[in-house]
Length: 157
Image 1 (cartoon, rainbow, N blue to C red):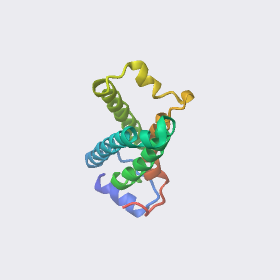
Image 2: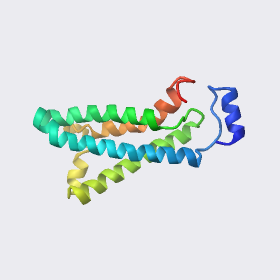
Image 3: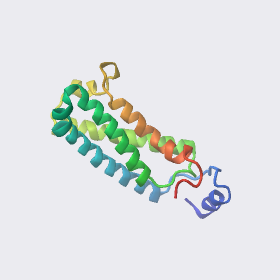
Image 4: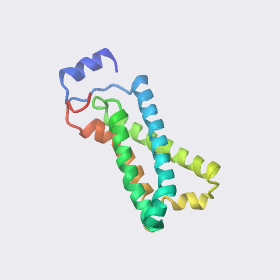
Protein backbone atom coordinates (compact mmCIF):
# COMPACT_ATOMS: atom_id res chain seq x y z
CA UNK A 1 0.00 0.00 0.00
CA UNK A 2 1.36 3.43 -0.81
CA UNK A 3 2.04 5.94 1.93
CA UNK A 4 -0.86 8.14 0.76
CA UNK A 5 -3.22 5.17 0.82
CA UNK A 6 -1.97 4.17 4.26
CA UNK A 7 -2.54 7.69 5.60
CA UNK A 8 -6.07 7.71 4.20
CA UNK A 9 -6.76 4.30 5.76
CA UNK A 10 -5.43 5.45 9.15
CA UNK A 11 -7.36 8.72 9.01
CA UNK A 12 -10.65 6.93 8.49
CA UNK A 13 -10.32 3.26 9.59
CA UNK A 14 -13.71 2.22 8.18
CA UNK A 15 -13.02 3.75 4.76
CA UNK A 16 -11.87 1.66 1.81
CA UNK A 17 -9.02 2.96 -0.29
CA UNK A 18 -8.48 2.63 -4.00
CA UNK A 19 -5.18 0.82 -3.57
CA UNK A 20 -4.37 -2.45 -5.28
CA UNK A 21 -2.82 -5.39 -3.51
CA UNK A 22 0.86 -4.82 -2.83
CA UNK A 23 3.57 -7.38 -3.54
CA UNK A 24 4.14 -7.76 0.22
CA UNK A 25 0.45 -8.57 0.78
CA UNK A 26 0.46 -10.95 -2.20
CA UNK A 27 3.51 -12.73 -0.76
CA UNK A 28 1.85 -13.09 2.66
CA UNK A 29 -1.33 -14.43 1.02
CA UNK A 30 0.78 -16.90 -0.96
CA UNK A 31 2.56 -18.10 2.16
CA UNK A 32 -0.81 -18.44 3.90
CA UNK A 33 -2.04 -20.57 0.98
CA UNK A 34 1.06 -22.81 1.22
CA UNK A 35 0.35 -23.28 4.93
CA UNK A 36 -3.27 -24.10 4.06
CA UNK A 37 -2.17 -26.65 1.46
CA UNK A 38 0.00 -28.34 4.08
CA UNK A 39 -2.64 -28.26 6.84
CA UNK A 40 -5.46 -29.44 4.59
CA UNK A 41 -3.28 -32.23 3.17
CA UNK A 42 -2.51 -33.33 6.74
CA UNK A 43 -6.26 -33.26 7.42
CA UNK A 44 -6.80 -35.59 4.45
CA UNK A 45 -4.13 -37.98 5.71
CA UNK A 46 -5.70 -37.85 9.19
CA UNK A 47 -9.10 -38.65 7.64
CA UNK A 48 -7.76 -41.70 5.84
CA UNK A 49 -5.50 -43.06 8.59
CA UNK A 50 -7.50 -42.24 11.72
CA UNK A 51 -11.02 -40.99 11.13
CA UNK A 52 -12.00 -43.69 8.62
CA UNK A 53 -11.17 -46.45 11.13
CA UNK A 54 -12.59 -44.53 14.05
CA UNK A 55 -15.84 -43.24 12.50
CA UNK A 56 -16.34 -45.36 9.41
CA UNK A 57 -16.55 -44.51 5.72
CA UNK A 58 -19.80 -42.56 6.06
CA UNK A 59 -18.86 -40.22 8.94
CA UNK A 60 -15.12 -39.74 8.38
CA UNK A 61 -15.56 -37.35 5.42
CA UNK A 62 -18.09 -35.29 7.38
CA UNK A 63 -15.81 -35.02 10.41
CA UNK A 64 -12.89 -34.22 8.11
CA UNK A 65 -14.85 -31.45 6.34
CA UNK A 66 -15.79 -29.90 9.69
CA UNK A 67 -12.21 -30.17 10.97
CA UNK A 68 -10.84 -28.88 7.66
CA UNK A 69 -13.16 -25.87 7.73
CA UNK A 70 -12.12 -25.04 11.28
CA UNK A 71 -8.43 -25.38 10.34
CA UNK A 72 -8.96 -23.25 7.24
CA UNK A 73 -10.54 -20.47 9.31
CA UNK A 74 -7.82 -20.64 11.97
CA UNK A 75 -4.96 -20.56 9.46
CA UNK A 76 -6.41 -17.74 7.38
CA UNK A 77 -7.25 -15.70 10.49
CA UNK A 78 -3.73 -16.14 11.82
CA UNK A 79 -1.77 -15.72 8.57
CA UNK A 80 -3.73 -13.41 6.30
CA UNK A 81 -2.42 -9.88 6.29
CA UNK A 82 -4.88 -7.11 7.03
CA UNK A 83 -7.17 -6.72 4.03
CA UNK A 84 -9.52 -4.07 5.44
CA UNK A 85 -8.21 -1.27 3.20
CA UNK A 86 -8.71 -3.16 -0.04
CA UNK A 87 -11.50 -2.78 -2.55
CA UNK A 88 -14.19 -5.38 -2.99
CA UNK A 89 -12.77 -6.16 -6.44
CA UNK A 90 -9.34 -6.89 -4.93
CA UNK A 91 -10.88 -9.15 -2.29
CA UNK A 92 -12.75 -11.01 -5.06
CA UNK A 93 -9.45 -11.49 -6.92
CA UNK A 94 -7.82 -12.85 -3.77
CA UNK A 95 -10.80 -15.15 -3.26
CA UNK A 96 -10.72 -16.44 -6.83
CA UNK A 97 -6.95 -16.91 -6.69
CA UNK A 98 -7.13 -18.95 -3.49
CA UNK A 99 -9.85 -21.21 -4.88
CA UNK A 100 -8.10 -21.59 -8.26
CA UNK A 101 -4.77 -22.50 -6.62
CA UNK A 102 -6.55 -25.00 -4.39
CA UNK A 103 -8.43 -26.69 -7.24
CA UNK A 104 -5.22 -26.91 -9.31
CA UNK A 105 -3.35 -28.35 -6.31
CA UNK A 106 -6.11 -30.88 -5.56
CA UNK A 107 -6.29 -31.91 -9.22
CA UNK A 108 -2.53 -32.33 -9.48
CA UNK A 109 -2.40 -34.30 -6.24
CA UNK A 110 -5.35 -36.44 -7.28
CA UNK A 111 -3.95 -37.30 -10.70
CA UNK A 112 -0.23 -37.53 -9.99
CA UNK A 113 -0.15 -38.97 -6.45
CA UNK A 114 -3.49 -40.75 -5.98
CA UNK A 115 -3.76 -41.76 -9.69
CA UNK A 116 -7.48 -40.86 -9.75
CA UNK A 117 -9.41 -40.58 -12.98
CA UNK A 118 -11.09 -37.34 -14.04
CA UNK A 119 -14.44 -38.94 -13.23
CA UNK A 120 -13.28 -39.66 -9.66
CA UNK A 121 -11.93 -36.14 -9.28
CA UNK A 122 -15.14 -34.54 -10.53
CA UNK A 123 -17.26 -36.78 -8.28
CA UNK A 124 -15.58 -35.09 -5.30
CA UNK A 125 -17.42 -31.87 -6.28
CA UNK A 126 -20.91 -33.43 -6.43
CA UNK A 127 -23.04 -31.90 -3.67
CA UNK A 128 -26.01 -34.01 -4.78
CA UNK A 129 -24.02 -37.12 -3.75
CA UNK A 130 -23.26 -35.63 -0.35
CA UNK A 131 -19.74 -34.44 -1.14
CA UNK A 132 -18.74 -31.59 1.15
CA UNK A 133 -15.59 -30.39 -0.62
CA UNK A 134 -17.46 -27.65 -2.55
CA UNK A 135 -18.66 -26.22 0.78
CA UNK A 136 -15.09 -26.16 2.10
CA UNK A 137 -14.06 -24.30 -1.08
CA UNK A 138 -16.92 -21.85 -0.49
CA UNK A 139 -15.62 -21.13 3.01
CA UNK A 140 -12.14 -20.62 1.52
CA UNK A 141 -13.62 -18.22 -1.05
CA UNK A 142 -15.29 -16.22 1.71
CA UNK A 143 -12.22 -15.84 3.94
CA UNK A 144 -10.85 -12.67 2.29
CA UNK A 145 -14.25 -11.05 2.81
CA UNK A 146 -14.66 -12.34 6.37
CA UNK A 147 -11.21 -11.20 7.49
CA UNK A 148 -10.96 -8.21 5.17
CA UNK A 149 -14.43 -6.77 4.81
CA UNK A 150 -16.72 -7.94 7.58
CA UNK A 151 -14.36 -7.98 10.53
CA UNK A 152 -14.93 -4.88 12.69
CA UNK A 153 -12.33 -2.09 12.35
CA UNK A 154 -9.54 -2.44 14.88
CA UNK A 155 -10.04 -6.20 15.22
CA UNK A 156 -7.11 -6.90 12.85
CA UNK A 157 -3.53 -5.76 13.19
